[in-house]
Length: 135
Image (cartoon, rainbow, N blue to C red; front, side, top):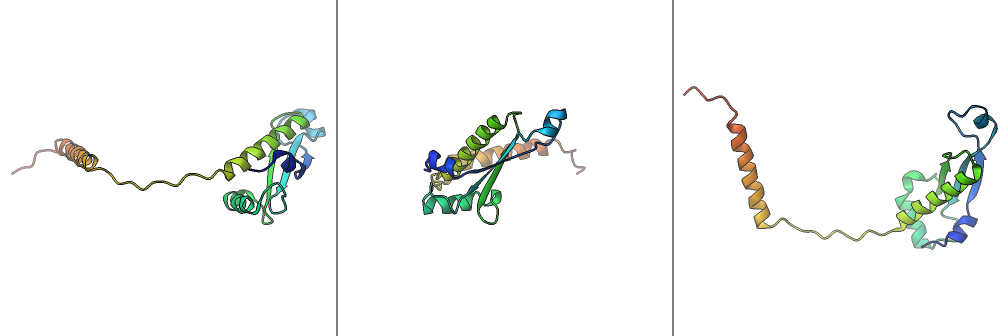
């Protein structure tokens, strides 16, 4: 589990202009926050955690292994900074959770018989909808 204090020190922030509607305010203020987190260079993670993050978050990373996230939900730059840091920590902790392996099971004899019985009932119901044959 990464230490949030060390992790927050390794983040690099950039404020940019937010897109979308908002009139004059959005045209003159840089309230959108973009945060970058370089996973391979991080000292908050051990080597196993780095490998796991690089594997699980591969679709969200740059070729150098940098995770980039942004927030423009609020008109406040400080609020957007808090939101994006919280979201980044959530993403990292979720990716580091190791799911327990699935136990392989097979259907019971009773469930197989029930499935076949229901299948036969459906078949009979649909067969009853057919026009009678001319024999």
